[in-house]
Length: 258
Ligand SMILES: [Zn+2]
Ligand SMILES: [Zn+2]
Ligand SMILES: [Zn+2]
Image (tube, rainbow, N blue to C red; front, side):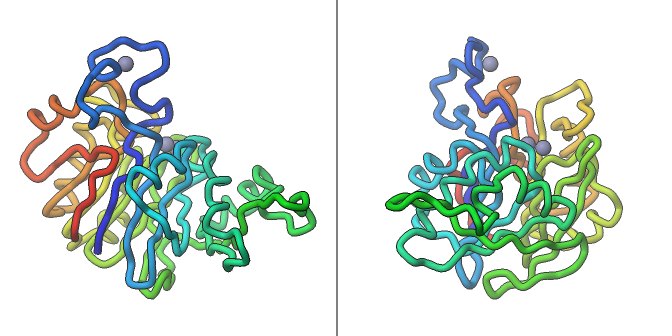
């Protein structure tokens, strides 16, 4: 199984507009972080995790020319506002994409993007809209996606919830503030764990700090942990130097075999 990190930045992205800090002015391309997305190659095709604003650029950068299904972790703007870029995968008579979303977000996502999900809204002649069928899921209830068993894993994210997943030896979570015991259990035995983390130090209401993510990674006991959803308060070089063994900072375009 291959995992490609398409976007590893927090909601502002890195560089942040108007900022001249070390990360925002860095010449290391790994310090350019677009908003969160990932591609997981499953037996039956590529599962795209989230549709952030830079989706088109990410697909071009990582040379992903086909997507088999989509997984929405939650419906914050930085995770869904590139949804229109799915259009390229459903034009010219191709089948609608299956888009998996937690039951609680089914109605609001349909409402935010009514032009996509309301069949009575037809694009003008000669134009198109993405074609996607929303499939609701619930935490802990296994699904078959692209010929593999995928288990949704729910995590608290300030006042809302985000939904990661377990597939084979991969555990993938973003936008978690903590890993509840049920999530630790669901991820037991994974080889690779992905967790969100913002920065070192001060706690945040909705996201792990790096220290908290490292601690969560220890509790799961994954062989390799990759951090994503990172901010401009840390550079990749600092992360490479400071993270404990077995914990790595992901960067846009990084692709790993599991
Ligand atoms: Zn986010
Ligand atoms: Zn900055
Ligand atoms: Zn979020």
